[in-house]
Length: 307
Figure 1 (cartoon, one colour):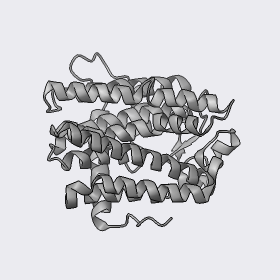
Figure 2 (cartoon, rainbow, N blue to C red):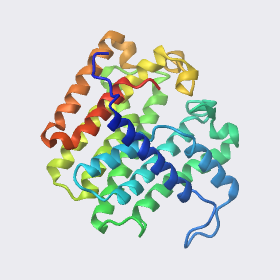
Figure 3 (spheres, rainbow, N blue to C red):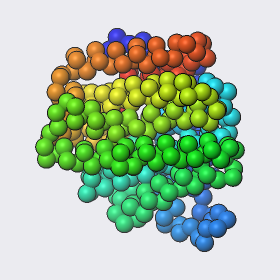
Figure 4 (cartoon, rainbow, N blue to C red):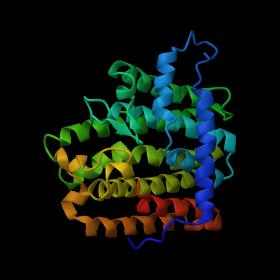
């Protein structure tokens, strides 16, 4: 690819820092100690939730929440909690996607998937618990935001995750195994299944900070661009990488007959499109000057990632 590599120390430092902070908060949130108004937390269930969540990863989505909030002077601790909520919801989706009835995967980030480490019933319940907990975290008193901003975040995340977003995208993905969609169908599927949560991660920052509607729209569009780039890079990796590098099975899309933009247009087209998406994403943040540098590097990172 011709895009500028995202190897700047500032980006790497901030990404690692946000991952550590997110992991630390998630460990605390996912303890076995029941919260006020909770009756009890079954140890086997919380262990499965931790297995599906505290298993490494770059924590890109929480990072995008933190950086998009910082761009507008949003409170970091608040952004961290919103990022943790988003990561809980994202990890729920991975646990359910890995189930035999869905993508049927045995590995996730190089470790046994939750239904392999525990069983299918516990995996389903762990996903259900993480999904509902995400909204608990946002609405909690510890999340220091005015009620109207909490409502905006809850509504936006519900739309991104539900029937018109990620869950609907997964339904389209399963249907694609029986009948490959055309290009418009693939773009819709990918915008829903993968792009919707990345879009939310970028849009959440201006909401947290109380920024203008124009800022929110601009960051939302930025999220849409990197969401498409993320999926395009993922499809390329599925073709060119291996399970040891990815930490999950490779080549599964082709093996299950799923249509992808890479399969439709080829690798050269995909790499050129990735370059164009990166330029568009970077340009969207140009009005913010140097304050947006880390987010611009994030766009380059998404396009050039190797796992």
